Image 1 (tube, rainbow, N blue to C red):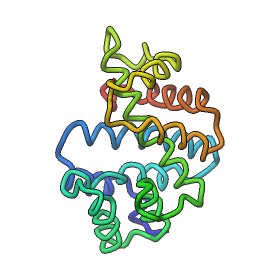
Image 2: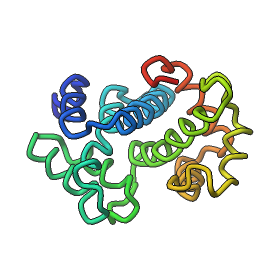
Image 3: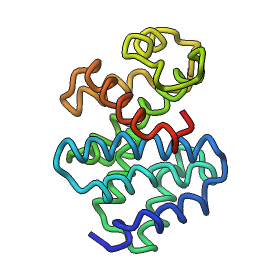
Length: 188
């Protein structure tokens, strides 16, 4: 484990160097929030896990195609001295990468990625646009609406909870609660 992978400020500087859009930055923070909460729950390294989540999509704005993302990001992180476990967790969040999700960190990142984005989208359509209004039932109801946040993979949300061996409702509630605790930074 490299020192860089523990340094949130360093990881944040990489994220902001490559990602300029407010929505992509907020997504990174939302996924980081959920993954760090799971790290606490599982007794894992919060900084390390959070930084993996923070950087999971850092290359997406510059390299948005399936041929490039997250492969370019993994190359950049290798050049910057990040370890294999860090990079493989990021690679494995894209099912098409061929990198298996064979550890708890990889499974947690995958499980939180699409769900954090979906919870954010649900928050934006609540009357007061605050995460305090979001409930499991409202998230599940919106999951059935294929026109709502149509780019978010419902299949990935469901499979993510299964891979993590957490019931879907419990997973959704866990992530909502984690995001509520960090709602100021997330703008929710």
